[in-house]
Length: 251
Image (cartoon, rainbow, N blue to C red; front, side, top):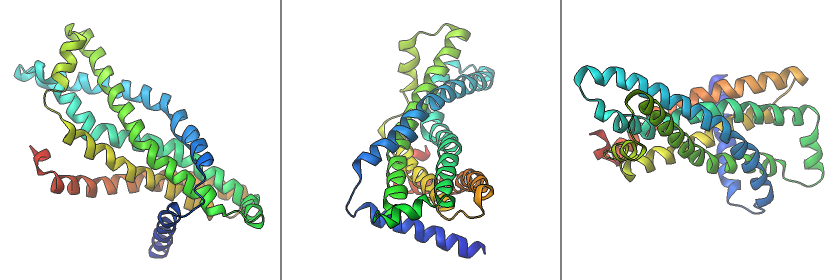
C-alpha cells in the first residue's frame, strides 16, 4: 500500500513537471495563485520571522555571554537564519497554510464533481488546477523565505537593541560579516523543492479524494502531515547535496 501510494505520488509529480513545459501556460491563473498562495501568506511569514528572530537572539545571547562573545550574536543569528532556520521554518509554516488549503479546495472540487465538469468542458483540469498551483508554490517559496530571513534578522535587532542598545548599522554590519552569496543562494533555492513538495502532495491528495465531505477533511489533514514529513526528510538530502556542491559552507 505504501509503495503503491509513493509510486502514484511520484508519477503525479512527474506529470506536473512534464505539463509545466507544454502549452497552454495559463499565466492568469498562475498570477491568481501567486496572490492567493504567496501574497496572502506574507503576513504569517513576517510575524513568525520576527518572533523567531527575537527568540533566537535571546538564546544566542544566553549561550555566547558565557564566553564573552556577545559581539558575535548578530553574525551567528544571521548565519542560522539564512542557512537553515529561515528556509525550513518558512516551508513548514506554508505546508500548514498552503497544503491544507490546496488539499481542501481540490478535494471539495472532486467530491462536488467540479473537476469532472471542467474535463467535460474540454479543459485540462490537471494543468489548470495542479500545474498552476505547483508553479505558484515553486515561485513563491524562495520569495517568502527571503521575507522570513529579513523579518528574523529584524526581530534579532529588536532583541539586541533592548538588551545592549546596539545600533541598526552596527547590527547589520556584524550580521553580514560572516555570510555571503554562497550562504544565501543554495539555502533559498532549495525552498523551490519544498514548494514543489507542498503543491504536489496536497494536489495529489485533493485530486484523489473520495468519501464526500469526510474525505475532504481527511485530505486536508493528510496534506499537511505528509508534506511536512517530506520537507523534513528532503531537507536532509538537500543539505548534504549543498555541502557536496559548495564544500566551503562546511566551515
